[in-house]
Length: 121
Image (cartoon, rainbow, N blue to C red; front, side):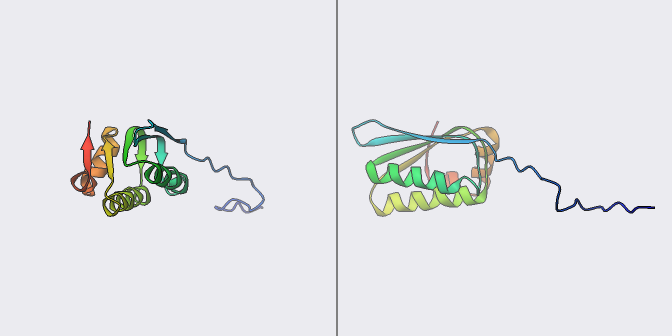
């Protein structure tokens, strides 16, 4: 009689799907930018998000972070947004948030992010 293990064999391939994520930046040429974030912003996507956000902050005086198409956000992304807000204050620049979906908005409200930042929409 053969035994069946409760754990999969190390030879069995396991699929790990990366959550959908997109981040783009539109710079208007007069000192402001709009950063659009879509999908799921989590630990796996924070490095890309950080690079695009910091690039926009270094190129312009005002950055608007549009979260309307964001479906999920985790604590690593919240930390990055707060770090970017602190950077904006130190450099006498502006970072604003365009409110996201109900779920994203709720997480940001519960963690106090919405109270600390300028929010539009």
